[in-house]
Length: 181
Image (cartoon, rainbow, N blue to C red; front, top):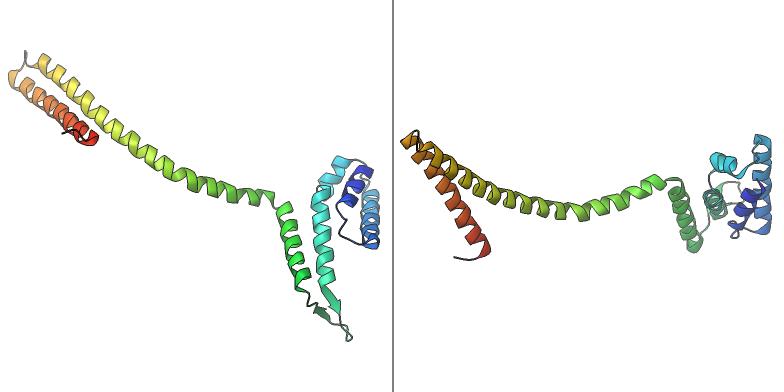
């Protein structure tokens, strides 16, 4: 438990010494009251020291940006630099607790980059399969027509004609796709 508190303290350097002491005392008592003795148990209960420190810094930053006026109502300070710091600390606190959400954005970017290449690859494979199909169909039908012609002349001629047509289409498409005419 002491290593957890020491690590937490090392991430609270932006707070004043009094604020650091308040935070450390609070979480030391909290862990003691909960009966948490180990670093792992403290991480299970409160998150990592970095995550807890970001949350605490964000809370203190929000409190510091709000002040009480003479009537007891809250007013926001007019310090833009402190407000920007508050926004960044809140974003860091949210991101430290929403790490799985933070992984979605890179996954979307990777998907956007991969999809065009997979579409192009699919088109290339489809064209190659088309040419290979024409070639195989032509060769198989020519062979089958040569066999059938001896048993049924007109059926064999038909199958041979279809085979030569398929082979001709393969030859024409392959020559036109390579630019040879």
